[in-house]
Image 1: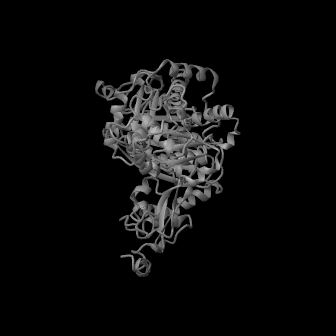
Image 2 (image 1 turned 135 degrees about the vertical axis):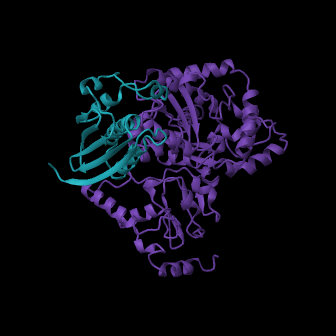
Image 3 (image 1 turned 90 degrees about the vertical axis):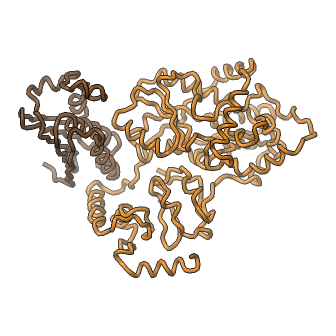
Length: 145
Length: 431
């Protein structure tokens, strides 16, 4: 395992659609200012944004941790939400447990998790019903520039 | 990558160090050290916000002067449609064109044709575009630089179609060199511009190709001269000098409706840098995918609100509405010319638009992280008041400058009391 260059933690406030997306915007600025190439930042922002939205939609509270090494960027998103009973089903495109209200707001089309996996080089979910969900994503850095 | 050129200069002699430019700059590209403003070139996107706020008149656009035009044997004006919105309600585009001839231009180009051609080229491109959406217009040089510098992941959203002013420059050189037997370099293609940003797209096109235009003259530079000639009743009959094919000068102006052939449902015009920044943030998160074409102009109200225009935006728009309402249907000659050229010309951008990363990538990632951590650490010592007296627009900028070794953290008046005495000396006599 390569050494960590940087680790930063962020709090995500659940049920607050007004502030949703602020953490991923912050990540974008940090990584862009560090000179990470545009395509990598873009993939990471998609993963972070979808992860952030899942916390906002389903949990009261969550944390996002950004870990940068010389080889990759890792994201850990942990929440104290309802948990996912069937992870395999949840990973299917179009599968969603979102309420009508969420759909009316334009969220919950069942593309979040599949989208996160598609934009990651490694992707893993751990969940316990009633306790919460943890998502781990890894995106490789193409070049060290 | 070559250093970015800019469409304006700061006159150090005139600069009184008032910091208005530093405080207004949306990309935090200006520092004021020892009472003088300077630019961090790679951060500047040439929006021109600093030009209008300088109380000392120290920032000026690098447009060209009339004397410089004398090196051309034949001078052709390509007038931004915004020019025609600057004069009285009853002054027609044809009268303004006549005044430009009186002023010394040898011809005034029928720019409406080029604009119509680009409208068609864009419509075609949008129809065939495989994604990503939305496509973003590339005719405003500020928008292009903003994407390259601050939204590098979005460069492939910029539509790869050339600006109408470039297409005009190419065609007018072709036509007049053929008709008059002149070499293309003996013909001056001069854009009459509503903003300084168009001059950078001539000096240094973002796609790294060579511009077909030879320079730009600001509308405010010629305003008085044109107005004077408009008011003076000309006895000369020089209509023959206009020698137009279609006679169409005025096509569009306000942002709405510049692309009559695009679907109303999938076309969104957007003006003003702060709104554009908000929308770009949302596009990065995947919003607005249903929009096919996003037309962006950095100036509030579009080009009629450019920083080298004279008339107040809303007065100019009122004139614009009148020009649009009074515009006749396109003449058969106009349609014929557009069809002829559309069949014969290529309108695609001649190079590719690449990201322009901010931090010089000479450093490796480890060093960049160290700098960032150092800046985060240094920031803790600063008051977060963003007073600007250190010479940076915000405490964060000052911490970053210090972290990168560009500035001394002690320039903060909260950290060293001598600093206020230094400032007093620098500004002595100016207060």
